[in-house]
Image: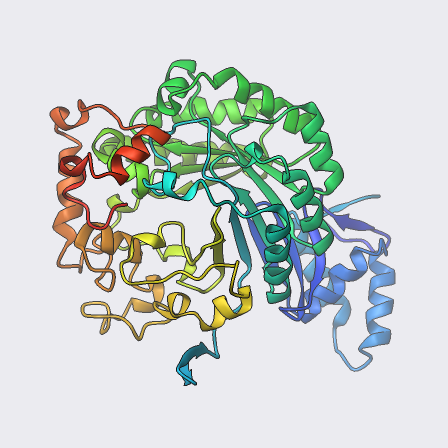
Length: 92
Length: 394
């Protein structure tokens, strides 16, 4: 699936995205499993969870990490990965 | 690395627990022949933790990092306070799972659990036929399970079916998968029987032959290819037919903690079979202290405890020597290699069990169902002959 700037995703049903203080990271919980997300993936999914479009997510993260190169490509890569794992789904 | 501090052993590098299994009661109306519960469970049925104690346990374990909660038993729905416990678990941020036979569920309770924030229900199913379902559970529960499956789907829970595989149902694997698809299951766990507790007592009767296992694996793989992401299929391998052991519990005291009905805390389901280990209890010890400092949880952490052939094995980190309880039950030594491993000097015990699957005389002996009456019999030492080849089986 091609990821377009106007796309909006959400956390898939039966999955829960939350911050875990004890692990110091975001996680996705689902039946029989839990995935700890690394910093970048956690940031992206946190904004997905806020119902932001891919364009808006990219803007937000460029603002937050102005020195990071190729951040837009990383974001698309993470969304593709999350889609493949069925952690998120498209809403529009 | 364990450190000694005022005589108390404290593990400073232990990871945090992620999974908490609350075995909230050992009572169960079903009498499944393959139940992993302790055979002497009747000794632990009198002194169940009350609601308040469970809520305290949930809070302490959550503070420690536990995020996945399984509420199990016995049959957890026999307790009247499951709704209250689920509501607390949800507000603490657990992803909560009710592991049930379906007995005790009704419309009112399933709605109350949903309102309380229960995330999913794992329902045990046994076969496509009423005959096998009723035989292996020693109860008439086939229609009940079909009804509860529909109820789970209707309320929008993810539907997770758990089917324990044994020689009576393993040849129906295709039909079982089709039934799960028909019920709209999101996940199905095909759990080949692991031999602990009641299933070990009934191993001669339950263990499938090798060709049955190979067939089941083949059919499962074909089905998985066809169905893709629509229904996730977990196939729990029958370790006896492997030549390397499972990394049991993902490592002793690594991610998993069980609090039993009476408040004892165990690193794995059958840890009580290991002699000379005292299991701490939540009535008098904080969960954090139990996880990090108790001798029981530190006993088999890491690899320092290993003997040969594990100690010098290049694969020791892959499986951490396999299952301590299996080593105890079959070889009589909890520190020895899991007998499943082809490098274990005790592998012949597994090979003999496999050979025994071809002996119809052994299979013909009656099953001992998981009942209070049979539990009492075993506790009182009435079944010595049957249990003689296993060590430390309570």
